[in-house]
Image 1: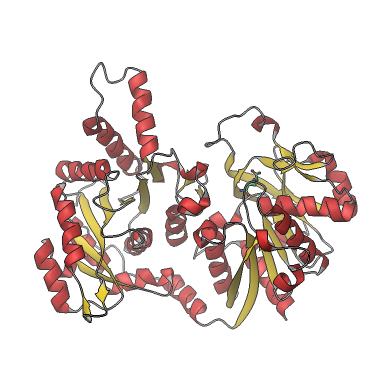
Image 2: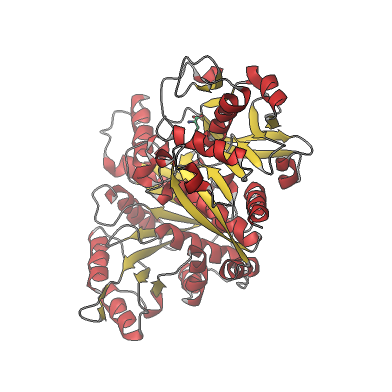
Length: 536
Ligand code: GLN
């Protein structure tokens, strides 16, 4: 066995949305079970420096790592599957690659050479791929290449893969994810799109080692042999990836197809351990056989694209399984909630979560929803903007400051109960300038949050510019909204609660980013529990 890190590249063909992220995470999970330290990286072919400036309608949620990187939502899947944190190095975009090369050019680092896609851009890509391997923390690095083979923008990435395979032939492997469509009229599975997408890879010098074939129907032996023959792979390296009703079943489907075995064999690595996945199977069993159901409303303004709230939705799956309870999420558009329909929209719910977000669209509906659940003792969980709206609602309807607002929306209101942080005021750039990443939070004894975490100090991830305005703290506490979580160094408010209410918690941070299959998040567990109690 060689000592160097092994690199597995995952490419996609035929169409987007085949689930490269889930296949990468599932393969990583199996290799982790086999006894290897594994991480997954995503290379995104767009020119934004990171997805932080993207509207969620473009690519869904922006996921945030401990070290404050704003990343693609696939990193959330990697963490939820592997239970290992990712970092800035796990997501690289074309924008970042070019920015780095251009900075080097300005510093004169290329010594008068003409700077070109090959070798300068590809060198930068190869360096980024190897950063995680060279950290010494991982034996296997899986690199998922965003986009579809044949796209102009992913060419430099595929070229970098070709070069790495040439430079380290024993340490690299390419898994190509493709589609085998079923033509109902012909009653047949069709292999031609797969042949074409492998041909597109071959044209740029990359022979895939393994083909993972997304399909709606099982692949029989003749189909596997046909694909193998046309695409120069072994029949055992043709892996069926049949549609599953839960993403969490995919590791078991891949195990059944022996994807991990084929990978280890091709990389000449021994299986250090057997695949047990005991906790994982137990979790799946709880998802499949819930003892009860709760209905929870998710109030947000991007609900037309459910990926905008990916981590929240998954955190509910984890917390539901923990509580042996199915969480039936009702997606509610915040723009559609009014004083007239709020009782009808929220009245039947066992709990309500008000989502994070930016800007004024849908704010009124969020505040109206919060007033309703506060007054009707329905468990409430507000995250980031959801927490800020809870503070605004309380100021207006309980303290009586009718004009109270967040300065994000009303800059010169008389009671700016949520306001911009001092250090944010002078920042003009939009990208990467928020309060980002993990910060400590000290919890008050006896609060709902302290009870949920059963810990005094926790660390949670942030992504925001505005904060609770501490100038008004005494007035809030006098009226019954208490800051039960604070940053121990700065005194910034991280959690507010209404102790008089059965469960009313607003968090300035984003707990959803840290929920995994093996570590469901304590606040989601407690919120689901409170909703279950309310349902009874
Ligand atoms: N827009 C708010 C802020 O910047 C909340 C951000 C969020 O919900 N992630 O503070």
